[in-house]
Length: 122
Length: 106
Image 1 (tube, rainbow over the protein chains, first blue to last red):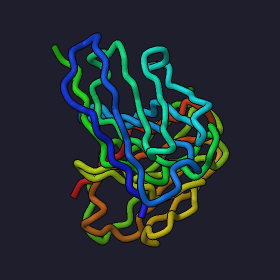
Image 2: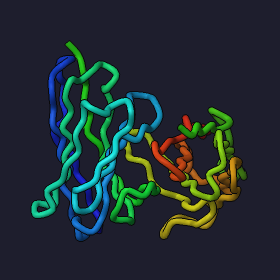
Image 3: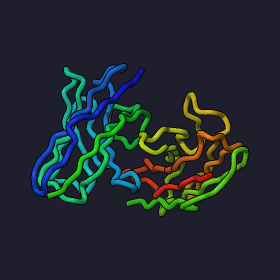
């Protein structure tokens, strides 16, 4: 079955960088677009970014544009989120999520990872 | 950005009750709407997509309706597993946006 597992979370100082990873299994990773969605502690869901199946196209929420970079390695079935210039307001559980399409068309999220907590604090 | 507003924020109900949640979009989104259930400490789980299509494996007590700007999620007979937070999500355009959630309490 489809499985997504995030890693790379932890406590990071404001202004520093962190890279999250998401390893996929149970499906042909290179077929599908992937997203990151985050959830601040006790708050609602916020869409962060999307990448096409071949990794050539990305799109970001305004709140992270210019600071976060999404990428993927289809040979390793891995998704990445490079987060730079981190702010306290980036503190959240970060989920990777799979849709059913392969391009940047907005979709609903069919499958979710278990999430990984990133805490931005000095 | 399309704003999604859910009501109520909190709803108290009992096992066996029929409950309905509402989600309103700030502009028309046709039927590009999904519903999720999220239990504490877990990832969201897809229940409904395209406003009224039941995701595979989701019990038939869940149903969705609506189009344009107003949508509803109905649970016909609450089960203990259903006490959780429910989110709507529009995927008509980017940025994808979610409602703030409705917490269903016992």
